[in-house]
Image 1 (spheres, helix red, strand yellow):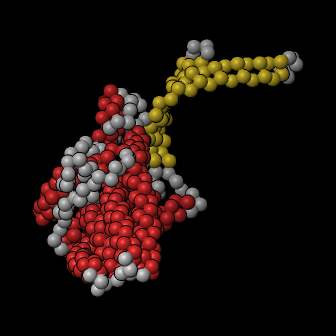
Image 2 (image 1 turned 30 degrees about the vertical axis):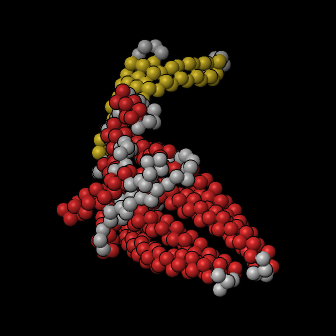
Image 3 (image 1 turned 180 degrees about the vertical axis):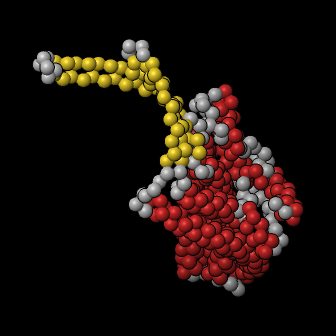
Length: 460
């Protein structure tokens, strides 16, 4: 990692570390709280952590191929026949106890390549786990902002219902004294019904948002949210894309998969070479007689009907596919960064324009309401002005939520939306803890050290 990238990461980590402190009110659940809960309660993370531990065991299995295999064999035989000389039955029984040892002494690097393939697969699976983690945390961000947006939408619509109700009462009073017609009252009644329908729809959206929040975060939301601050990210699109090319788990995973494909090609070529194997047996029969033998053999494939050549061609195709996938992944990551960067700019521009719209709409509404009281404006004019103001405020909440999601989508597109980088202040899963215990293929299924590791990660 270059010094520039390291400095950039430190700056981003410092900015992101403020996430847990960015709350509007003490009683509100911050976005940091939601992310912590999502990380702790995610079944997807549990599932993929287990997948990673299974990949760790593939390294242990590959290491085990370098070791001898010792087996106990019990061999019992029974034969029955008839003597050709006397015509009588001949029966025999025997039992043998055998200790067998088989050991591959040399296979021209095939076992070593198998170990390297397993190790690269582990590294690839770790990056897949980080991709899942980013998805879990980004889903939590979306759920948090959706609840905030939906809660504000309910408040806006409820305020609209209250305002139109007052306008309806005022219209009825003016109708009774003959200042307006029955049509004006009907217009106010229609708008009130529409406002109530909008409130009901907003309340339904809030229920849906809270259900999604529960699924993403792991507990219900009471709707008390606060707007987080802006996380730190690079100053230019080019810098963000360069950082993503170095750090995004999808690219790193594709790099390891390409390395696996290269090793599989080498393994396919190595199948042309011989294998040197040693064997030994110690035998004791039911009479107590013992015997033993040792063997050393070289096995060289001479003709396999084209099977080895086919496997080699398949490995070449797999290598080409993995390299193309790596290139395409880099293109897609750069596109994701550009899209999220654009989304931030669009949302910021929308918020700026909407703020001006709200200011103008509020002024228009206040003026129209005063003019209507003097008889210079109709009830419909007031209702239209109120609807414009409501629409602008609603658009503001949506744009604000989109901006926050875009911020964290940009972090995810650079590979930085992880619990470790966000400095959430909680223990994070250590992918090396289990691997370091099993990588040398320990003989016991558990063992004290492995027990401690499993307990530490909560999987015992």
